[in-house]
Image 1 (cartoon, rainbow, N blue to C red):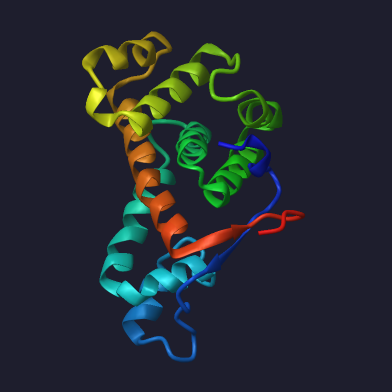
Image 2 (cartoon, one colour):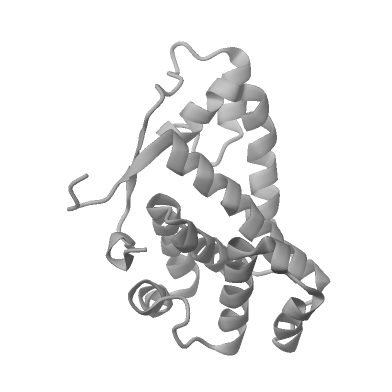
Length: 191
């Protein structure tokens, strides 16, 4: 992993498959795109080729990331940054790092993760989130009930733990889609 690739700057994404264009989209594709978080992005327009999958994915994404219950939204965003760093997904890491910073006003947390690695010193609750998301990403089959103990020690309830797990799992999928259907365009970096 090259931490210099990760950035808090906005990163673009260049698809390797031609995205669905608004003029040629079917009614079903338009409906699925309208339900997506960023309907006009090349990423979602690329996913619209498999309209049935996109029609299921977008509501699931909203349920995992944006519902106003359980784990705080910023903490979900942090988990997705961790997953994206481990998986090397520069685009997803940039998007969700910026959302974490918008919600918390703590860019220093993201900079520490990028510059010093995932083992950097963090407040206990953030440390527990980072460690859990990292292990779930690196070694899901190695997860044990003992992995919940640090989360419980920082006050997480069952719903918050499930929300954290869902966010990390969702981004294992999202990263793989991003990385196999296109590539990030990082400002100031030559491909």
